[in-house]
Amino acid sequence: MKGFSLSVGRDGAPLHAAAHSHHPWPDVTFAAQEAAWQDAARLLDHKWEHVFGEVIPAAQRHIAGTLNLPDPSSIAFGPNTHSFVLRILSCFPTNKLVRVLTTSSEFHSFSRQMARMEEDGVVQVTRIGTEPFDSFEARFAEAAGRGEHDLVFVSQVFFDSGFHVGNIENVVRAVRNPETFIVIDGYHGFMAVPTDLGGIADRAFYIAGGYKYAMAGEGACFLHCPAGYGPRPRDTGWYAGFSALEKGGGGVPYASDGSRFLGATFDVCGIYRFNAVQDWLQTEGRTIPKMLAHVRGIERAFLAELDARKAPIRPSDLLVPDEERRGRFLAFRTPHAGKIAAALAAQNIIVDYRGDRLRVGFGIYHEKEDAIRLARALTSVRA
Image 1 (cartoon, rainbow, N blue to C red):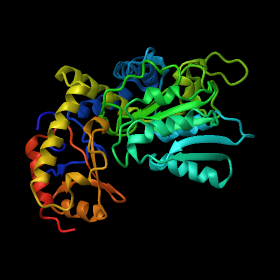
Image 2 (tube, one colour):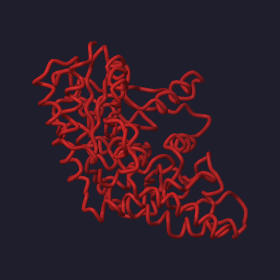
Image 3 (cartoon, rainbow, N blue to C red):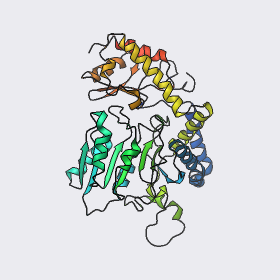
Image 4 (tube, rainbow, N blue to C red):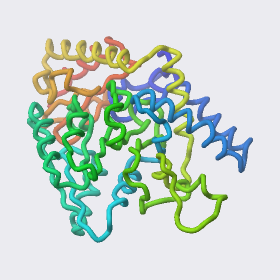
């Protein structure tokens, strides 16, 4: 399997149909991992000069190009997106209830954090249901336009359905209060669907990472930080003052670019891997539209084969049947999701589920034959 011989292309590897969850690492990440070690051994104390002088700027340029951001320095890196959520929350006064507008379908970390803070009475959360999907954007934009919130937090693609907010710019522009923080969770959108933030780069935060469709694994998460929003996060580490360490002076200094949202020391291997994957994709000519088109073709083959067979899930069980409104995975509603996933695992086939949602995700390492194999395997599952 070209480009993935060390992971899903090896002998005995499973049929991995969970590219939306844990994405296999391309072969080029092995040399990148070695390079991170070699740089640390060779440069010793000067490693961070290299990381901040070359490795991180290269990653910032890749991301800015992908998202059409005008200034790569607006991007901060961290070990996970949750650390950025906490840092954003730390921008609000401690003596004031933080009013949050979000949805019923945000990822577990954010949802759990909000629920815990609600217990302590420090946030007031309004949640807009994502279903019915046809009216979601209008309903959410209407709620956002009331101007009653300090923080608006919404996913670009929802993890539990695959529903893609097609015009995220309209949602952002619906927020009339210029002091409201707007955060777009792009973890299921980045490198999965074409994303242009050029028109809202000065207004919205965008949070994502390399674990999924960017194929870089853990530790390569990032935050685009619009200028002027959160100039001095209370949750801060020494990296946020990295450029001022040797200058001295009073007070707690912050840069005006995205580095103001940095934390403290973290493992940078993921950023090395991220750069290697981005360089490889560019060399191979694998653009996001081309990768998406490849996956769409495999999805269609899978759904057609599924439709022709007797299986515990049907194309009619899709939460988002319209591929124009879908991210890069399929979510089926079924009360037997867990049982189906376990039965497929027994056949060395990996899918995953969340509650009553069975999720299937194809990647650039799949061909139509893989989709047909999965559909046929499903016919042997008795739910």
